[in-house]
Length: 309
Image (cartoon, rainbow, N blue to C red):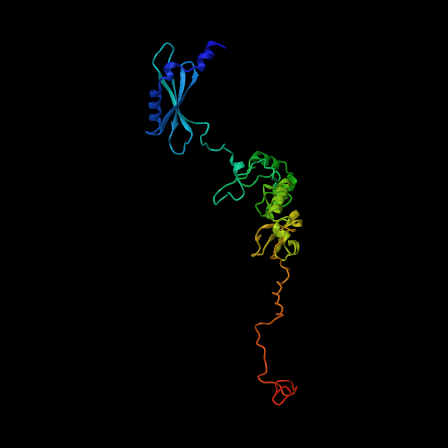
C-alpha cells in the first residue's frame, strides 16, 4: 500500500478540526436552526475533508449537510470548498424517475391533455393514404415530402391528363388513387389499427367484460342473443359489440359476445313470490261452538234424559 493511499484514508488533522468553519458555511447556505449535530468527517483525498451535519428541516428526514474543506500543501489555512445537502442512508428520497410513456395509465388523460404517438408505434400501420401526404399534425407527416409528391405528378401519363376536361379542382394525378377514394368516403387516415393493436385491445376488453367475469358467470344468457347489443364493424364484429342497456354495468362499453348480465333483453320475468302454505294448526281463527246441548242425539246432559237423576 502506497503512502498516498494511506494519507487519503486518514483525514487531515487541520481540516478535520475545522468543524466551526464547516458549520458556519452550512448555516449560511441553510437557515438558522436547520443544521444539527456534527455526524462525521470523511476524507476525500489529500488535505480534503467533508464534514457531515444533521439536517433538521422538515421534509428532509435523514438528509445531511455536507461541507467540504481543504488546504494547500505546506499551508495551515483551511479554506471552504463546497456546501451541499446530500441524502443519507436512511433518508426519504423521491422515487426513481420513470418516463411518461411508462407512467401513463388508462384514465389518466384529462381535458386538454395530448398523447402523442410514436412514428413506429406497433399498434398502428399505414392507412389508406398510400404515398400521398398525410393529414396535418400527423406523426408521419414527414414520411412524404413535397418533392416526392411532385415526382408523382410528373410521372403521370400526359395523355391521361388531356383525355377529359373536368370542372372540379381535384388534380387528375390523384383522382384515381386509393387516397382520393378514401377521402371521398370519409375514411382517409394516415394510420390505422394494426393486427397487434387489434389483438391487445381485444384481450383488454375480454378481460374487463368477457366470459370469465363473475357477472357473466351468473348471467341468464350471453350478450350474443341480447337485443341491447350493438355489433361492431369489421373483424371485431365476430367477437365484440357495444352494450346499449342503461341499467347494465357495461352500458356504453365494448363487451364480448360471451359476456352477460342480469339485464339481458330475453331474461325471464321475475317469478312471483311464493304464497306461504296454510297453517296446520290455525291459532288465529275463532272456532264456533254451540251455546246449548243438542236435543237430537239424546246424549247425556239433556233435560229429562237418561243422564238426569
